[in-house]
Image (cartoon, rainbow, N blue to C red; front, side, top):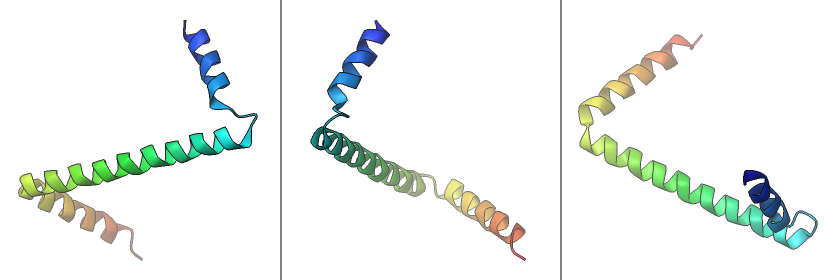
Length: 70
């Protein structure tokens, strides 16, 4: 069944024509932007809800950055 699904995907992707491939790329970029936005919002929410964990993570990151300075 997955082979049939993959064949249908390759037919629908429209790689032969220029316009459908551009639309698919645009849609992928739109989905990626939405994902990154939602991930950022989730991170901000977590930081507000768990301030101690946020402070600890910030301190760890600072230590990591100090370790690699010359």
